[in-house]
Length: 209
Image (cartoon, rainbow, N blue to C red; front, top):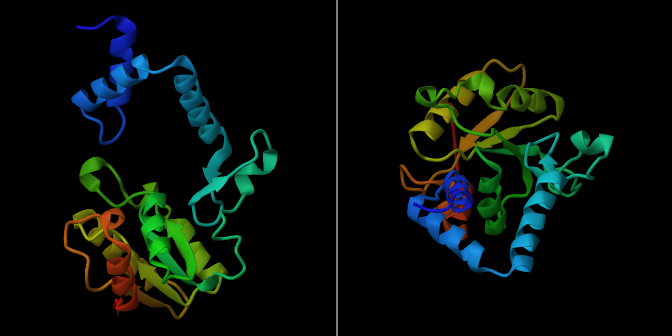
């Protein structure tokens, strides 16, 4: 229906999560009508983020890297490198974006571990595809005393939490495992919960046996 470059732009935008065909068309038309310098600035920001952002070597949150530096693979995020954070408490989340609402709650003062997803056999996501081995290694190496499971309260998140609890029982350490309690409706996603709800859920967390 459109000239080849326009259709290609719509198709690429449509591959982004949460962007349907109509939204892709609107964004494409907006970009094509925008001044060249605005589009160039957006392209530069995207390219810059891709080249400067890497994964934290410790928790797999986003971390800022030095482009072209050989040490970029060993950088830590601001949270892991903060000496005021409590290393004995780990909050386990599925994605880096889930850290933001918890931080906004102002309640949690420990560190995080990002699994980079949740177990979903239907979608081909198994334990070996997640950062579970790294989590188990951190618990032993860093003297972690408590793990707070903050996976999404949906089917995949619950299955992931149950799997982790079973894995923790094989560790040769005394570990308290808790999960968020009240305030999070079943089937919802963590990133859409408000700060007060998250703070209450974390404060009223319950031990998992």
